[in-house]
Amino acid sequence: MITKNELKYYSSLLQKKFRREEKKFIVEGEKIVLEGLKSNFECEIVICTNQFSEDNINILKELKAKNIRAEIIKNIEFVKLSDTINPQGIAAVFKKTKPGKIAQNNILVGLEDISDPGNLGTIIRNCDWFGITEIILSKDCAEIFNPKTIRASMGSVFHTNIFEEIDLPEEIKKIKKGGYKILCTDLVGESVYSHKPSKKTFIIFSNEAHGSSGEIKNLADYKITIPKKGKAESLNVASASAIILSELSKRT
Image 1 (cartoon, rainbow, N blue to C red):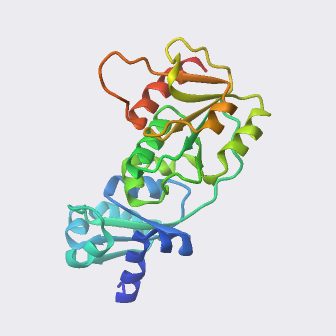
Image 2: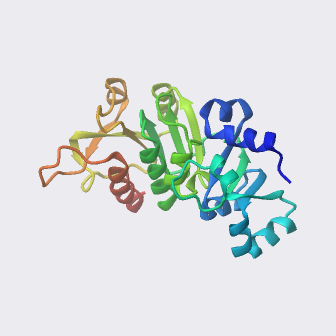
């Protein structure tokens, strides 16, 4: 049985301050919880409502078989753990893990000042779709363990190695020494459809309102763009990342 103090403690993980202090985070929804349970992240507890437990007996049996603590609470209590309008009735708390060294894969992704959690989560999901596991975030990016980021990633935060609060210009300089060519996205640049990427590419996506910083542009070997045909002023950075990663992954 879960105590009131425990419920209060776990609900505090909806706030960034406590996630950082406790080095834990909370996820909600059946798919994302199950993705987390299949990952290398350590699960501290799974909490679900009476209704969810009745409708998903097999999930509860599986948790018991794996010796994962599972607690059933009332709907009115579960609301305290949720930041969604229509909770699915299941949440889990995981302990944060630190990624190791950046793997020297063909494509690395860097994110500069992606401040919207929804965009960040979607880019992570796009990277996962195209098999890109190494993602490097600048200090001004949204937090990966923000519930909105996790939800938008649809569990892809569990499949990728994400390096947070990195001095991106300094990291670019290090990665360059490893033989990588640096690409940055820009409204003016070579078409992504004609660009011939090197075997080792580090692509930087930046805040759609401000674009790449001058420092990043100066460090880039190439600027690439998605050619515009219509009248839209700009393309959402998450949408742009899907198009560009699709093209790069074809050729590396």
